[in-house]
Figure 1: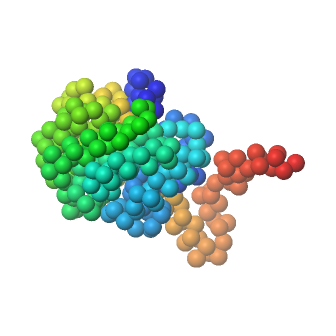
Figure 2: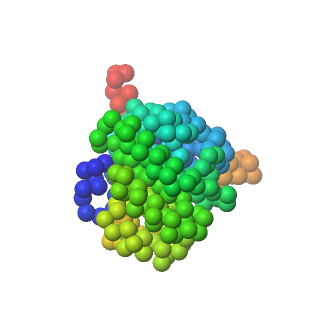
Figure 3: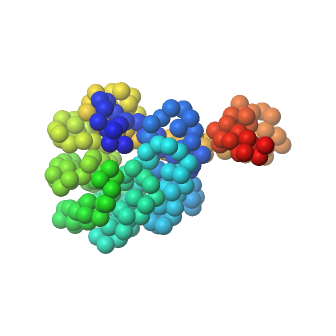
Length: 278
């Protein structure tokens, strides 16, 4: 991942909630993928991103994804799942799962998806202590520690900038300023944080975050994640197919929605196992 970041422009890491989506992203030529906490919670539990998926479930899902692709995987580690000792354990377990890096937020527990109402952040000093614990726990120098602030969810841009600058000074590899709420803010943040490598959440449903990745690179962002794109696509396609089965008794009318079986088997690498059986 550090090699990708050393290149000009913005690294694009589409979201995936399981290993199949990661393999499809790899097949389509992407160079990195992102395991979203929101998407993983939906895929694992069918429930919203409010801290219900614990560290064990998230690192296990991460292990499945990293074991399925030859790409760097970035993962959402929520707020570290507890105090600074829990944060240290979180770093070690995600490292062991083979991910290229994690982002840790400054939310209070229980955390919430940044786009939801009711987000609360910990005091500044606690956020710094959380980051320091993560940096100290890291054993692989290539493992990325990405510090995220959710202060914008509270409408406090000044505090978001303060924390972003402090996180970078403490040694975070990148900073994620979550919950950007206007096109102007998208454009201003890199200018207001010169020299701070930024990760951008290209959230799928807000027009101001639906940015072309080339443009994001020109603005100064180093990584762009699309946290829910494949998950929302899966959910919509699943609904379309299930309604066809319910109402028409067959999938004949929605075959264009389905990946052809031969393509599906190719993505899974079935030929490798068939050749071994011969």
